[in-house]
Amino acid sequence: MYKTLTTLIIVLLLPILTFAQDDNVIKDFVEKATDISSLKINDHLNVLQVTHEDNNFDLIGVNDQMQIVWKTSLKGHPIKTAIFKGNVVTVASTEYDLTRSTNNTFNAFLTDPSNGNLLIQKQIYSSPDTYQEYQDVSTGDGNFFKFITRQAAAKRIYTFGFLSVAAYDNLLNKTTDLEVQEFNDKLETINDFKPQIAAGTYIKTVWNKYGDMYTAWLNGPTVEIYRYNEGKTEPSNQLNIDVAFKENDKFIPGNSILFATDDNNRNVLYYGLVYYNEDKEGTLGVGKFDFSNGKKLFMTELLDKASLKEIKKNFTVINKKIDDPNLNISDLAIRYLKVSADKVIATTSSIQEGNSNQGTWVKESSTLINIYDRDLNLKYQQVFPAGYGYPNAVMHSGYTILNNKLNIVSNYKTGLSTMSVLYGVLDMSTGNWDKMDILSKKKISNAAYLNGDGVLWFGNLFFIPYCQPGVIKNYRYDISFQQNQY
Image (cartoon, rainbow, N blue to C red):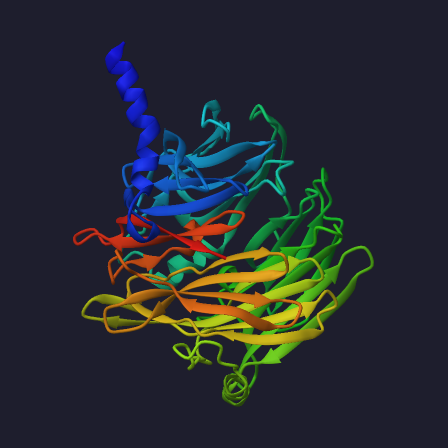
């Protein structure tokens, strides 16, 4: 009994003792992770999803004092954790490896966010591992649970020499089967159907909070968007993006277009993309579809050398240490698209990859931010002068919107061996920066970098995850967290 009581006291005190370190840094809060992501439950609780390389993962309830409220360890390789009917649902494949990714068997786990108790575990999908499949999950604003599977024409094992890489990629892009399943809060199937497979290359599927579904396909030069009303198995109508596209190394459909639904109007879908025009100049396109009446809007911003030079010239310095935006016209892509209140936010940057003696070297430019009203009139244009160069890793920024302020954290290279984090607060009403700071890295390794998917956003503060790659296995890292104020 005394041993049990002592153990309980240690467990309860451990988060508090762990947090009581210098400079608001929690060293090695997570060890030997291969991926992390965060889910905000409310202003005082986040759930951290931590993936490990041995087909196991952890869900960790973390409060705004960076104390571990609960921890639940589960088997599988998670692809998504989300809110569903007041609980937390996680979908995970039963197996994963670096060469073939996930297998084709998936379990769903339903946990209680207040204590981490596992409520239900159930296999929701299984098929032979012969062909490569891709899955995605949507729960809207938490009122439904939908799971989509796309089967490609390519087999999961690529036989070197049997097919060229280009031929194999073509098979990966070809869709042979598409299935949507919907589950209730007991993880029972309540709907299962196969959407129409359009000609051409599948791009992605998104749902709005009402459960209406949109599928996007590149068919020849045209991107076609099909809308499925909630509960229906046939598309109600179709609208096309009025730009001619050619699938090549500068326009890979699944990586080149983002979609954003409108919480105030179930018939409206926004999209954003960067494409290259006939003069090979980068162009940001942001569009709006209204499926109730077929109306379309499409606005473009030229991103050539002259326009980026003018944007850079107009950049207002608010921190003398950060006075030189690095804007690049090569390999541009859209990074973030969000509808918030009366604004639509689209960000772009350039990510270039090259080879070095350290492997693949990734370099990202500063981020260009465009803010529109809901009719896509450009209101403000700003630059977030982050940017980095780093081997073997494409790094994600973190975004959150609070009180009409866009908060951004991105990796920022400040020296030959120092990776920092740049934090900015943009007032979306005025288009001006309220704040821009390089966050301190005291007590944190110079080589550690930010994973923006794992930022813990709370009501009045946030915690930055710094990832320190392993020496031998650089895809596995230890993670320290740093407390910061908005």
